[in-house]
Amino acid sequence: MYDIGEFVIYGTDGVCRVEKIGASKLPEMSAEKKYYTLCPVYEKGCEIVTPVDQDRIVMRRVLEKQEVMDLIDRMGELPEIWVREEKKREEDYKEVIRSCDCERLLSMIKTLYRRKQMRLAAGKKVTAKDMKYFNMAETNLYGEFAVALDLTPAKVKERIISQMKEKEQNQKASEEMENVRS
Image (cartoon, rainbow, N blue to C red; front, side, top):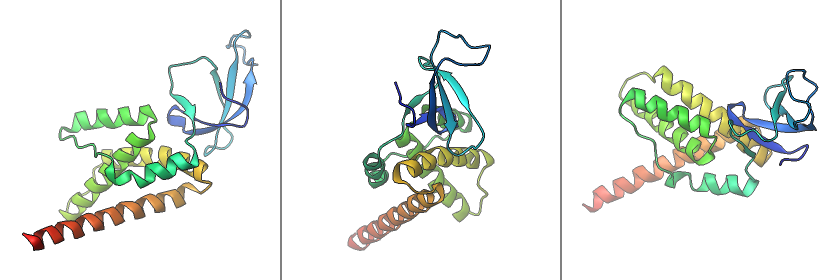
């Protein structure tokens, strides 16, 4: 059970603050059940009322600062999600979004960022579906990281992009060194 004032992830609604715990005043909800009243952090004026014992939507605590830092440090080791078949790729992306799993979201962002760079370098446009899922993943992940790190989502995005570019440059330098040795 979560406490009042605690930050949680509630499905694709992202980071929410637990405002109340108790019976709902809404007539369509059971007076005998306990409910969380959640307020999305990045969507002002919105409230979500959900049963304390619900298990259909992912609900979990926001990662701690050290967990976020460790995940960012391990970003280069995370596998990319390469799926050739477009329909299957979209299904996989939807599943990653629904999972609310930070590691999987970061892998997806990493993949879509790299895919974008490759398409642009080849003179191609970025697909609308790629952009859609890239933006969804960024919104969910950066919102959570921002709360954990006490930053804005924009600052988190800068940090992640910077880390990806640095990793890309290091990889290119390693490949060039390997080619020189050959």
